[in-house]
Length: 141
Image (cartoon, rainbow, N blue to C red):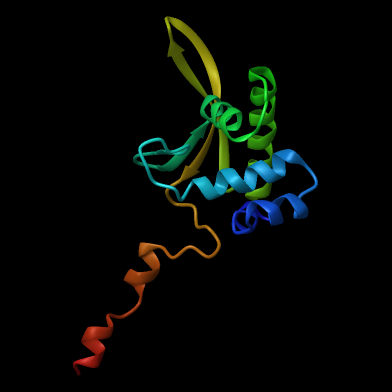
């Protein structure tokens, strides 16, 4: 099953169709991609990157959404969820290691990236609408 299909299920249905917690979380996290807002889980990219998700942000999100999850377990669940998302997206998402600095410490963090040129099933793109003839011009003739 694809991650985009999982995202269409409500939480109860999602839990019943998946047999692993990371797969269930993958559907919920993918659904969050469409949620715009100040405290969005996904970050808007630029240039070649449409949007991305950092492992640390995902671990924090898991701690907020799942009841009584330790920091260490949320980090492990975040790693497993990112692996599941990569697999369930049929490699539409890329996993990269990002060099980060925080509090004068440098470390590598896993980041899931959705490139701008990737076509998603069921998504209407600007290219689709620009390739079709304008209905106003046709109707006016």
